[in-house]
Length: 341
Ligand code: AMP
Ligand code: MG
Image 1 (cartoon, rainbow, N blue to C red):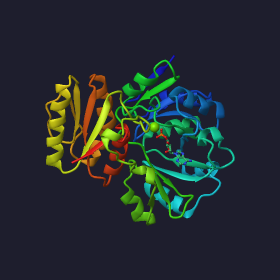
Image 2 (image 1 turned 135 degrees about the vertical axis):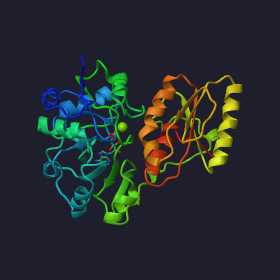
Image 3 (image 1 turned 60 degrees about the vertical axis):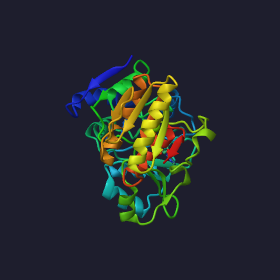
Image 4 (image 1 turned 180 degrees about the vertical axis):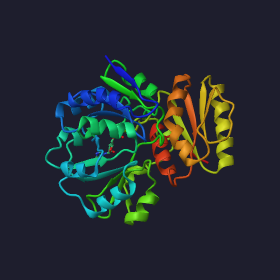
């Protein structure tokens, strides 16, 4: 049985206590953050954390991010807190930045996916912060989607994936950022970007200097014909996604050509656009700015999928600012099926 709590009007202390009680009892509570919805449990309760993996169908070696509400909680979770962590936290917390540090003894390996490191962040969302404070626990929370599916940016998305399977869903309306947090590893020198996200890399480098980019971040764009496999599928709807990257006018031409070609083959075609209009079976305009595109990305994937299309053609954008996070998600959603024009 799932209790759905409406908090679209903002944090309500009476209602948040219902969610907090579930967390303290080792139950699962989905809640909004500024990035996407999280599926939360007491980060220090091994059995509670294991239920997150089970509910999502998440591989046990994929670590969770621990959410905190006060900087001091870092000392309870990490065995070392380097200067750069303090500088980044001071500048960007609460916000869409996750910091990876050496794991403290109290944190179960179930939470860190067996790693000796722990990922921590302070979300910039009053409901999330209220839930953490009211439960008096650090809360481990991956995105609240079935593993492999697009992340949820609306409570409805969480309902679609988890209604009847978790104890509580807190509806805080649409999430502001729309892509998950930026993950940066501070256990290496120089620090390493493990996942691009809601905080642009450029802003981090302006504060702590050069950051290395993990090779997995950009993935390997491969020739479509040579990569029918689904090996890297992630953030993926049921429809096949193809990303078209390049100069704007040529992208537009290519997409129009592909719409015709696939329709001639009897397929239903959807388009994820960044401003331009396309005549297809389904069409979702994510917006023109990086911020709008990031905010609408997962919603576009979920809605086009619901419309029943067989193929989704997506316009690529430049990899600067939030564009790095957007393209990382899009290419994964496409299983790296990218056409460059
Ligand atoms: P999700 O919240 O579903 O986006 O998943 C959390 C992500 O955070 C993981 O997939 C990793 O990319 C990252 N992460 C969490 N903990 C660690 C860690 N200890 N080391 C490296 N990356 C981590
Ligand atoms: Mg996720």
